[in-house]
Image (tube, rainbow, N blue to C red; front, side, top):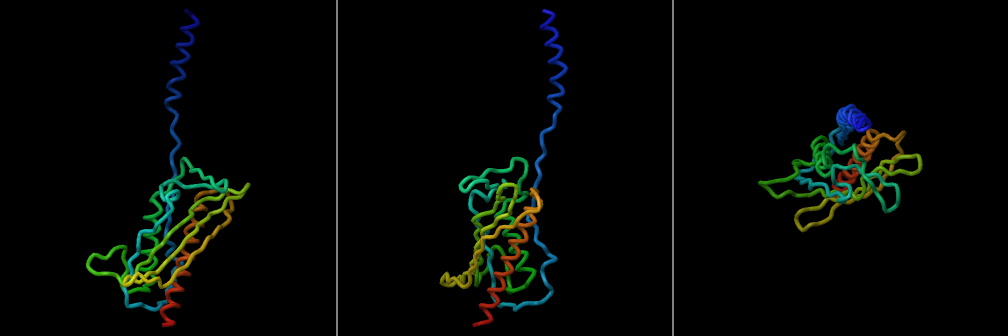
Length: 201
């Protein structure tokens, strides 16, 4: 009986300390538009409207969860690290901000209610992941841009890139920054292709 009482008192002492342990807080990451990278130079202003379609992202990478690839056909997700905004919405907002900043088209929006846009920008992201290779971590993004003329669904300009960038250390803040940089660089290159195409007409 004394033995059972000792166990009972030990449990009473230990249980409150178990309950007081705090759960691990999640950390959230955002894709931010690097406003400082936009130059003040005024490019060619095209007298057309551009509709930005919601970015289409492979379902494995489209949720709040951040994916890490450790094998060729295997991914897992970080348990306490997430996107603050789902990538389709985050990257769509990024593109909208970019084209509003550079003022390449007369009108830019994610949806036009009162008029039919002249062109539509379609973006697909096939890979958005941390790649673990031994002790190294890489930020990887495989992306495709297409500018389509609404009348006749004519493809005007397209660009694709599969980019990886080595991270200085295993840090998801560095990963987020690298992804933002890659996306900006490829979008900026694509905008240059649009300017080149329209000035050659």
